[in-house]
Image 1: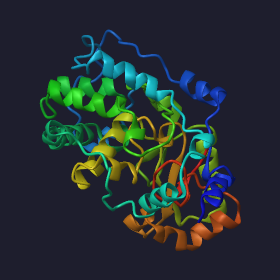
Image 2: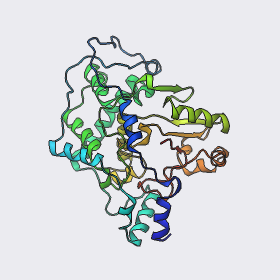
Image 3: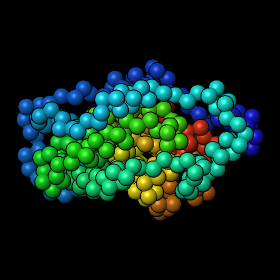
Image 4: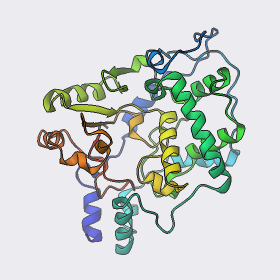
Length: 337
């Protein structure tokens, strides 16, 4: 593929979507403001993850101000600046043909290591495993479904108040904030930061849990689209991942970074860094019952269910095999916005 064809592909069809200011503000304004009530509604130990999945987290318990180890002020300011950044098609015009070839090679061989890839610093390499383990203790404690919804402050509350989790070390918190506020373009991920607020919240009133999946969808367009798709494609179609807030996306990204031996660029070729995922504002993944982990591989595109999605016009693939985001091809990802 030459440069002209590549650029034409990027700006045509489903390969590129720009979130309008109106839609972004609509989603942002729908988030409930963060409030601290006077009473602790969680007055007993959650017995297991099944019971925890029924937990309604409409309010945050009382506590002191966030016990965060905040990254240096300049880093935070840079992070907020980067959250406004968009990679526009005219910027891609600056690419030479060999750069286009190199770019496509990376997203099509997303599990490879390439010259110029960005890795965790030595200190963050040491923090990676204990930070993931603490996030996973939160997930086990509140349940996998709720872990998709909780915000950063809620995560800190549970860590602070339940010894089964334990307080986040200040260095771990600084590491999490650094990962969130970093400019993902330095890794080679060129998507928009659609959820720039570290403490964004998703409440039970905004979502509906999908039976048999353990996942939630935003009420409205996401839920309506899923029900329509499943009704037309058939009961063998299932929701494999729905709404994911910042904490969940952070855990996924760090787990992928661990699997990639600290290679942040390699991790970002498989999934969006926290704050950049459209799962945070409505997109969702589908798969075929019985296909298991292969639902998140190109194998899904060979299923009858995927072919029906294409035939019926439901699939407008955000992450094509020539997408401008710097991420792998994802035929299972349903684009809402």
